[in-house]
Amino acid sequence: MRVLIVEDESQLAQNVARSLREGAGYAVDISPDGEDGLFMAQTNAYDLVILDLMLPKIDGPSVLNVLRESSPVPVLVLTARDEKESVVSLLNLGADDYVAKPFDLGELLARCKALVRRGKGHSLPVLKVGNLEVNTADHSVRHNGKCVDLTAMEYRVLEYLAHRAGAVVSKTELLEHLYDFNWERFSNVIEVYISGLRRKLEGGAQARLIHTLRGQGYILRD
Image (cartoon, rainbow, N blue to C red; front, side):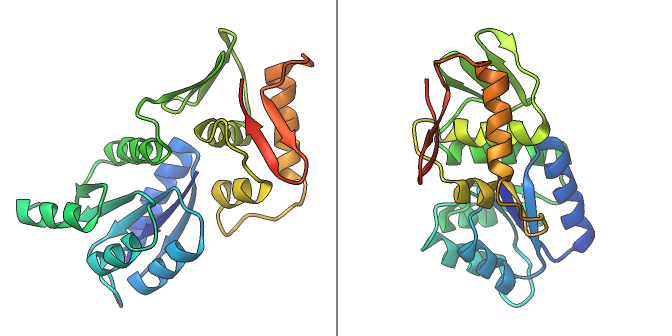
């Protein structure tokens, strides 16, 4: 999953980004102002936007208002205003959730995971595809009742496919949602992770979980 943080307090943005990378395995981009943040949100594929209200150039409510006209991406607002009127106004503008500063990073991480799940149409942390279970809370995977040991990137690929189970996911879509701007682009990186997942999940069995549609992408189905 890929997250955009629009926050002008550099240290806070870095702390939140580190928490998301280490605690959830998300790819994270950071924008320091509303103008740049709006541009990034409109031109890249994000699974969640974390938006501060008090931003240079374009303020948070204005960014949210414009973004809501063009994108359904979940938005979590960071605000120092905890008055009831401000919260109601934010929700009416289209915010999906909010946290008031100062906040606990553990709580923020839990809220982010919940918003990403709901944005993909899931309310529970465990994603089930046939006999496959992907636990997005603790990053564990079980197949046919047995634990499957995956690398961090194998898990991230599988989690995204599980969120989109039954749908064709192109290699480009995977790359856009699993990496931030800083990654080194290698043409076969997704194929390597798919191959590892197949080896660990299917073990050479004829019944496949991850199917390749030539020229289109991958589909996870029972």
